Image (cartoon, rainbow, N blue to C red; front, side, top):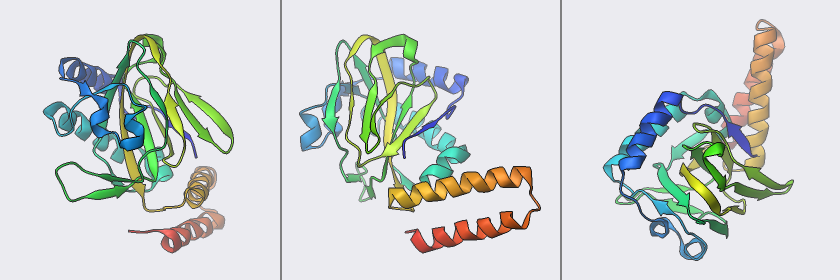
Length: 226
C-alpha cells in the first residue's frame, strides 16, 4: 500500500521546523546508511540525537499520534525516531531497499521496518527533481508532495530519490513497525476500517456497522503482534 497522508503538520509547524532546520548543523547522510545504501546515498542529515532532531522528532511523533489516517493505515507498534535530510546541488539517493531491522542509536531497542515514511518540509515549487520514486507490483510511482504532507509505503519496496537540480529538498524520514506485519493483511484492515467509517457516517445505527466493527477487531486480534 502506497498512501499519501495530507496535513500531518500545520503550516505554522512547518514554518517553525524550517527555522530550526535552517539553523541546524548538517553532516554527511551516509552516517545512517547500511552497507548497500552507503554506496548510493548522497545527501546531508541532521545528526541523530542532536537537540534539533529531538525537538523536531517530538513534533512529528506527536502529530502522528493525532493523525487518524496514519494510525488506521499503519497500525503502529513502534515508530523510529524521525531523521531529517537535505538534498541540493545534484544530490540524490540511488535505488535501494531499506534495512529490515533498525537499531535506535544509543539504546538497546530494535525495530522491524514494515513501513517507510517521508514527511516533506519543502514544497514542490521550491526545488526541481528530488522525486521519491517507489516501485511496487503496480509499477513505478513518483512522489513529490506539499510541505507538511507525508508518503507511507512498504519498506520492502525498491525506491530512490532523483537528483535535485535546483533549490533544496528537505524532509523527515523514518520507519514504522506495525502491529500487523503483513502488508496485504494491513491493507485489508485499512480498507475495512474506511468502509466502517463511511457506514457509520451514513447509518450509525445500522446493525451492519456493529457487525463489521466486530469483524475488524477479530481480524486484528487474529493477526496482531503486540
